Image 1 (spheres, helix red, strand yellow):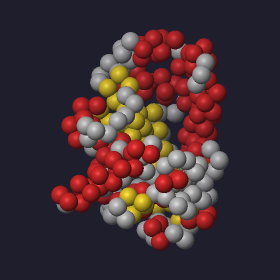
Image 2 (tube, helix red, strand yellow):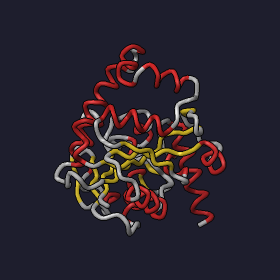
Image 3 (tube, helix red, strand yellow):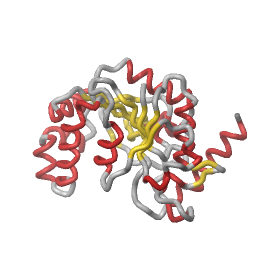
Image 4 (spheres, helix red, strand yellow):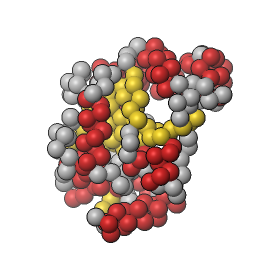
Length: 254
């Protein structure tokens, strides 16, 4: 499966920790940048074919990205970066979309995710991790959790997309962004019944998938990864020290 790594984004507080870094993807974690770690893990996975990195053009010659096959310019918004990344790929073939800030991703974990995607017939496949599995492995790594009827989950840094679904997905992302601060507009997108079930913890994963499929007009599926590493990312300044600690521990036990 081909992969697109999203390594764009603003010069935020995390990126400012690394002089010269255009965004957080280029922050050093134990001698290798975040995006370098992700690309290296994908390159080491036999289930991964072509690797495209979406990143500022100033970084296309960065030696940390030597394992990439191609580069695309990032956009102002993530939807633009995603559109650039998936351009020219076959419309009906699933692409692995990967965030650039997963410090403990490994080739084996990437391969497991690809195998699960290939066994799931959907146009949009969203990776997530169950809370119990996460806490058992990384009890000190914080997350925002969604309580569902089947369990409690957080989103991961990997998903899969068939390019043919991108126009519908992009429209939905725009609508969601416009509605995020308005309960009435959110209800118009998802339905009051869905919001009420979610608020009460009675919304099942199957119900969420069915409504997402109806909204997008394309099959949508959740992929619950048994590997919490797929949901360990770097969003805050405090996450950098934690990432370095996790990588050092992994290196010591390898």
